[in-house]
Image (cartoon, rainbow, N blue to C red; front, side, top):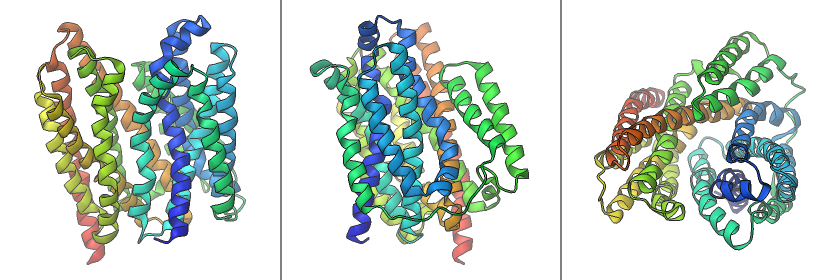
Length: 446
């Protein structure tokens, strides 16, 4: 790991942090924003939803765009646009204008993260992939927590516009450093755009994510059908938007199953546990943010170890061990009562976070090891899509279960505990593809 590589890692990590930080920074101030614009809360909700849907819609496009204009150039363009749209969000004259600018900001952020991951994976090579992916994964887990906490402080102390303006100097810094330090690779040929695949994925993925998140079965079904149509056309196309033939590789497909399953378990739990602190223990939103932060802390602490072990002994055994640790950290949450000590719950979250850190990022690295360098721009968006689909499904299903039980028995910890029981079960199921990954890795070494 040369100093130049660490410098590049720091630049790309800061860019990824911007996109993920902005995804949650406004959630705590939606009521304030709605009141300031004299808009209904339902309209203001689209300030968050529009950003997240745009973020999801751009993921499938990132691979083709990186091949067409070059990954580093794509990343720099997205950083510049992100700064511009952040400034426009701060100056928005109405709720409708803010929603429009947030969608554009989400589109730039949706290309920014996968472009950074593709560039990272290409530069790292298979022997350093675990450590490099661990570094880039830090903002994915840490930034949403910091965004929630920072959003409450910025809105209260400085005003709503600063929730967006805070991005501008950071983005400018990324742009200046990136222009100086990022490699200038040439575009990989003049690849035609798979227009049918583009239409199916750019409409299908946001519809599926929205349908799950908002419990809208028609939207979810429409999204699933569009993505099914994309699968059919991609397998028949000589130059698909994303190469689904990668799933023929046993290592890649097993790693993809782990990523999808952990998307359900991770993102579902990120919304379920706050309900315990808010509805059962009646804590404030800011206090809830601090009380749920140990999960992200544990994940970030485990990532460096996960990266080193993945590069040294292979990712499959690290993933399997990480799943065991995740289950150990989830079982106590499945036994929640209304009077559990907060220090005990924080310790449990740290353990669970360590398990997640030992699982998800090594799965990405292990899945990419068998992928040729020229096909990483196909593989990385596929992993991102699976993680988002799994996350949105887990979020909607688990939140619906908890909400229904809390409605029947307000203030009951049993509802949240039951949801964590389901999460532990889902994590246990993920042990199956993880074991297949162990066997595939062992057969490769033999």
